[in-house]
Image (cartoon, rainbow, N blue to C red):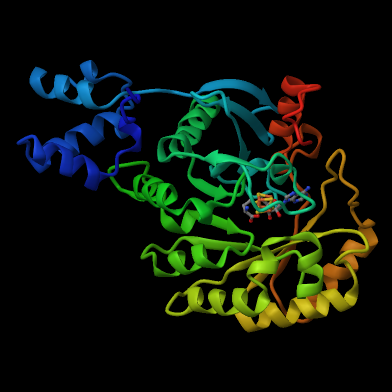
Length: 362
Ligand code: SAH
Ligand code: SF4
């Protein structure tokens, strides 16, 4: 028998359908969600304003489960990265970024969580640790939500900003992502505003089209990393299937009727995409899309040949984009020393576990 579904993975709509099917009123949905998301109980027995019959019905159809927190790296006032083990043994990494650790020194109570959407990634970008082990599977809605709950346990605070920039390509796990977003944004759920959520994509065009049709004003970041097909083809296999001639119109479609600028993420990799010519090509795309640009000097990954350009070269690139009046930021990946770049912690742990195993492709 498959395990019961998690109560923390139920959208209001799904819970309503279940409860009305069993003869209960809409009001019960509100009560159940209040116990789960406001009072944060972890058993149906604790839902004391529900009848014993309803508590039994819930317990026979749903369950609570918290993933096991395997490792935590970093300290409370800096970036903290943690690894959780799913019920099938899969390892998932997430990163807590307090506002105090932000480069702009912004003083606020903002706590950002970088979440994973898949175990590994099928897209195989040549510079990325997440792609190295291939895709193991999609994360379920409950596992996506579970990372937020684990982060709140670790931080002792509510997460109020989310970025889907951990392992995996979120837009290729759209159905589970969509349910997770419903629970995350619902005022009866985690109540994080859509404008405090960013989805990052490497340019998976079919998923972008679904996101364009999605009604909530979720923010979008695009891992561009190359402003020509020539550069993108070299480092991102996704570009072979969905080249810039398809990606750019899909981004324009996303931007239509939306009062939002997408962010173009651009990792600076030495001698691959860091010339001033690259900068002017990037400017052209940013202008067309009314986008802002976020430059990320490459974080080296053990076993991969790519290098970070010198600081001077990174600055010259940034200045060229800035001069063209494109809003631009340059951030060094937080927690470089704790393997904070996407997929690196899991990669190390999997290597430890699989030393010598023929299944390990790293
Ligand atoms: N798959 C999605 C979501 C992951 S986001 C996407 O690619 O957008 C993770 C971000 O970190 C992406 O922009 C990715 O390109 C970037 N990244 C991956 N490896 C990196 C590295 N070694 N150094 C800096 N950034 C890296
Ligand atoms: Fe996957 Fe994104 Fe890494 Fe590319 S950069 S391999 S799409 S996680």
